Amino acid sequence: MSAQDGHRERQLLVPRRVAVRSLLRSAALSVSLILAYYLLPLQPGTGAALTWLVGGLTLVVVVIATQLRAILSAKYPWLRTITVLAVGTPLLIVAFAATYYLMAASDPASFSQPLDRTAALYFTVTVLATVGFGDIVPVTAIARVAVMVQMVLDVAFIGLAAKVLFGAADRGLRKREAGERADDNTSGPSGLSGM
Image 1 (cartoon, helix red, strand yellow):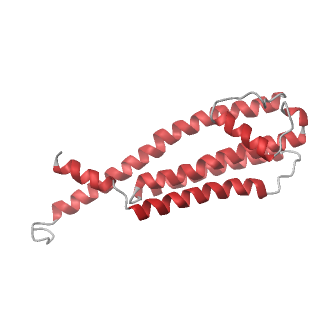
Image 2: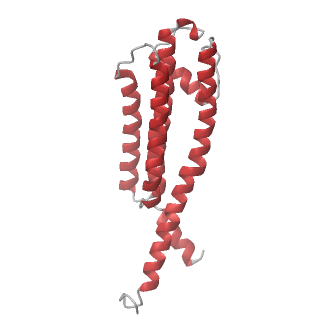
Image 3: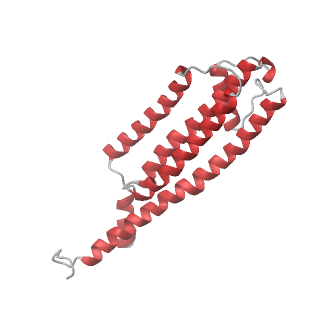
């Protein structure tokens, strides 16, 4: 192993305290979003499902877009990426679960069975995981369109996470390495700059 490989390996190590704090924060954010879904007053009405869907998807895009810069400049970009995914994924799930819940409340014939909040959440995760148990299926055309939109966006979200977020984390790590190499090159054996 070269000195550069050893240096890179040390950079990838995250202090346990920092990792635990970051992972706990990520878990707390995820749980908070799911709790908010259960606690927010979701009132069916004209356009309520579409409003939740558009608003939720807009929020997902805003969170990811604003966090890209934070990933690039983070001391531990991979931890920041995990946090972004821990917020973005439940946000996407909650946006669709609220949409399906409101659709089913407005038109009970939208799905093969009535959807309470838990059933809507279950159906959303089933579609996201692409397992399709078949116990809940969209029946009306508008429900089928909403599910198709979720399927396409889920694939795009997974691709986005893999390409953009993980790419940003890797670029952030390389940027940090370049900065540390520059610092190493400007200090001589005595530690004085420029010598």
